[in-house]
Amino acid sequence: MDFAKPAAPRASRIRRDPVPAEKPASLEKALWRSSREWEIGLAIIGMILFALAIDAAWVGISAVMS
Image (cartoon, rainbow, N blue to C red; front, side):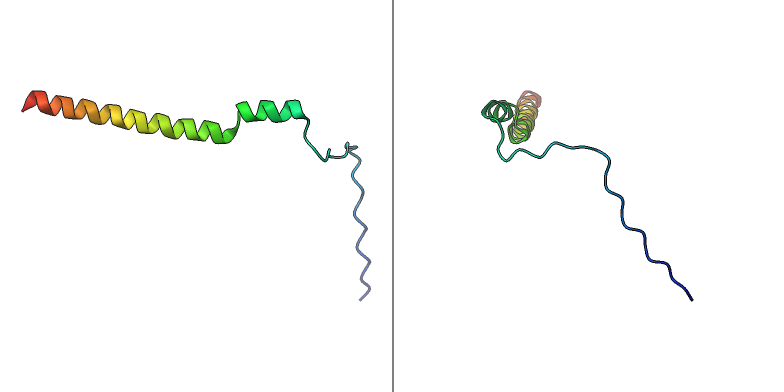
């Protein structure tokens, strides 16, 4: 049996700029304002406040009905 050598992988034809080592200062400030961690934290706070509002309404309705 004669096995052929596997072909060498072809180099990518897409030209890319090298990744910069540091982020620009203006980009860091913009990311701080729209950070995903802030968004997740605010969503959790919103859910807790909504649950407290429903709980307060439930207690109020219970007080009126009793």
